[in-house]
Image (cartoon, rainbow, N blue to C red; front, side, top):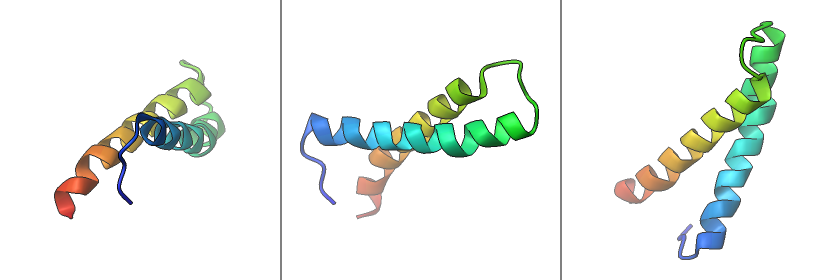
Length: 61
């Protein structure tokens, strides 16, 4: 997939943030780690992973 538009990048970052909220936030909540808000941490990690993938994938093609 070729990303040429800022809207596509923001859509992908939003999708990864939502996945982070669901997966990582749910994991932290299940582990009873309530020091920071689990969904906020999950969204941050998901967005960072999404940004890293968007930047790294063109290097492999």
